[in-house]
Length: 142
Image (cartoon, rainbow, N blue to C red):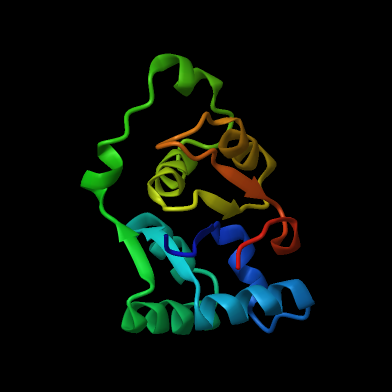
């Protein structure tokens, strides 16, 4: 199983000259051995954040550690009406939720509480319970 992780665009701003030791550790882990799961929409959001992230994405791509899920992959996941009604995050975050569900480990770091609650409230998917936290030290990502 790949050591993959989903990072919401609202936390990657912390990769710009990270002063927080936990973000330094996370950045080091991702840049050396971690896999990052993304979609095209998430890459666009990342592009609006900072230059450090663009360098990291290019490195992961070159190393084969950037896992990009295509629209067809995400369209294969359909939320029923009950699930859609229970989701409290932004409509845009539903595609991001699908990226998490498609990932191997189904773990994420997300600051947005509503999105994080949606991930944590989601039932097991392919036998694994999705998990999201607000800070890197709250989850075993390595």
